[in-house]
Every structure is written in structure tokens, then in C-alpha cells.
Length: 120
Image 1 (cartoon, one colour):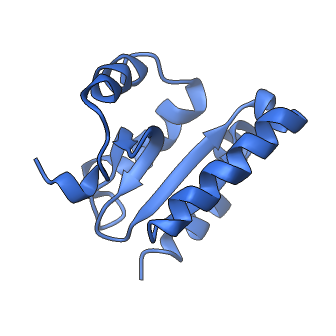
Image 2 (tube, helix red, strand yellow; image 1 turned 90 degrees about the vertical axis):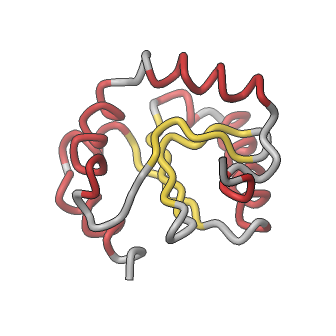
């Protein structure tokens, strides 16, 4: 196991991530169709533990995290939490891209273009 891929994630997070992979949202399942099997020329992992967080999707080669957010991310408390989380992940040298469920499901080409622009 590449420890630097997980940035010190605790074993309990791996169990939680496994459960999350089995219960992905519709938008996460849909986006995974475009990210899996090196479709964009690099390997993404889904529900990937990093430090004490779980990224929806992670490409270690490009240090890119993709988050797919539902409506609850629009609440002030969740927005603040997400901002702090992104800041902490960026301190590790990672880039975080956030998309709403609606963007993933209804503006997929734009989402994929934004992702691809970080894979160069």
C-alpha cells in the first residue's frame, strides 16, 4: 500500500470508504462511468481515504480530488466545513474540484472538460 496516497488515513476510514463505495449517489455513479478504467488517461479511485477525510474521487498521479456535492452542501455550516476541508487538503499539495449533482448529471461535458484541464 502506498502510504503517501492516503496521507496517514486511519484503518477505520478504509472500512467506512468501502461502505460508501457500495452506497454512491446517482451523480457519483454516473461520473464514475467517465473516470473508471483510465477513461481520461489516468487512474481515479473512488471513495478514497486521505488523512481523515474521504474523497469522492482521487487521482494520485495528478493529486486531484473531485467532490460531487448534493444540496446539503449549500447550507452555511456545510459550506464552511467544506471550505476548511478543501484548505487543509490543499495544504497537502492536492487540488480539489467541486461539482454539484446537477452539474454532473446535466452538464457532464463541461464537468469533464474542467477535470481534463487539471490532467495536463
